[in-house]
Image 1: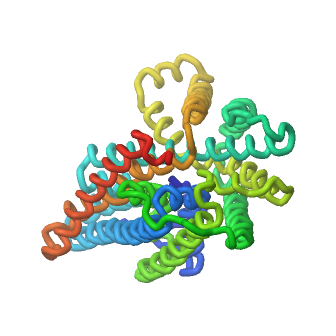
Image 2 (image 1 turned 30 degrees about the horizontal axis):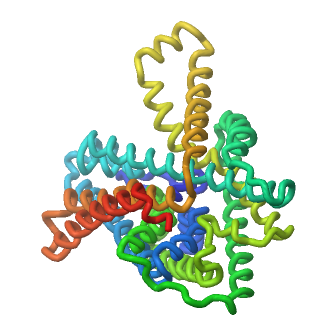
Image 3 (image 1 turned 90 degrees about the vertical axis):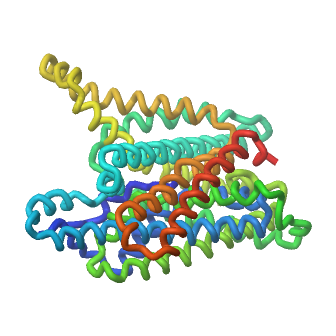
Length: 437
């Protein structure tokens, strides 16, 4: 999941009436959308095409792109409708303005739609998605470091990725967890995206060089292949929780749907081409992280090392929503408040101790993940599907339902049913091991 926490890079100033005034141009917003969506998941797309087949994989990516774009527009419409209601009820202006002033996050929208249950449900799914994305980061870095050291030092002997996760990554991430200023880590996020682009370029170059050997590639590999590829694609498109912040950051909000459409067309085409080229080049030898297919030369090693370094330093940004939710709940607990009143250092120790404990737990979970591709598809099929499709349609029906046309309500219901079926079917196939073919 890509769910990258880029909020510190978005400047949004609150104004009267509960709305927000953004300063970002269309070009800046386009860049922010791309940065928020594109992440390491893209490097698993060729494997999804191998599992599903080149045509099924292409359809899965395209369907995920179209569906995610449409559902992003749904939640933007929901917030717009809530603002219109506030303008229509001017007698409650002060109360409504204070309430809607904080309508900036996905969790806020869940609270408006279904009360505290909706907020907790939305935040729980965001927490699960960020946890899945964080574990995917650890697995990705561990497997690439294992590949680098295996090729340089041991040639044939494989080094377990868990060794690198616990001996290198965990101590580094514990040290970085003491940094609370996210903007200071923002340059590493830009570096990570640059490394992703460089890795994609090198992979495509290698793909084109061995295209002469590409034949007998399957178009379809069974009915279960399409949801597997769809789950991987949904994970790759997962920047959903940033939608409202991205829209609010624009100086001309009315242009947001068009800017978002441009971004999704470009990203979807790039995803399809990257997955297709990787599978056509390597066929059944395609690995769940395409960089592991690269030859053991210094340019490939440099790309892998650059990706690992960049992702290691952007990992705290991925962890920020998790830490924020946990620390907020911790501070609001009575026993913690009593502890703070008794011991001066209790707050500092408690908050940093919780961060260290979470990092240890995530590292343990990452060490048991059997494969990057299967895990990413599982997260995309379950948590990301619920977050990106089911919840937006439910919010849309609740907030705007009475004003919608029949076909719009039917479409929302279809999205909910298909999203739930997709989550169930994708989960079954991932757990049952069908995707390991």
